[in-house]
Length: 148
Image 1 (cartoon, rainbow, N blue to C red):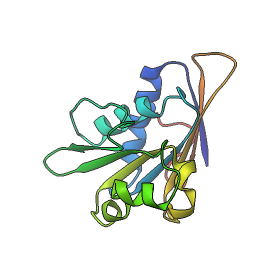
Image 2: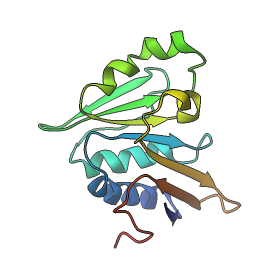
Image 3: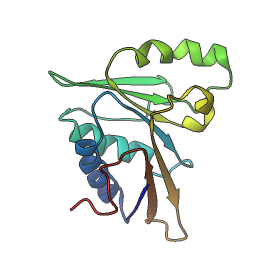
Image 4: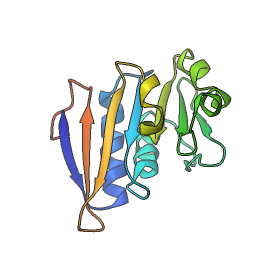
């Protein structure tokens, strides 16, 4: 486990950019955190770190956004509104797991029972300082508390 602190959305994006270089392509990244914690900012940086150039937005209403480069694909899920098996199946989640692409899932707490055992778990917590975030990363052996 590694723990980081960031003090702006840009710092959160930069951290995610660096983590994208350490997390093997094709992994499931399960994100946990309250509304406004910075999950989408993290995803923006992670997408850039994979070498994918595109506008990243929360897939709240679409449920899943697809971001592609010539050789990589990232599926960005928002499971906020998922409340049962029917909802989950309607997202196509299980089909995406077999694609070989990377998946990043916001609101993973809503589907925790079906997350792969080897997923990367990223929790983003707010603090009393409205700009500060504590970011905990579990499941990547090559990540240390400093990514210089």
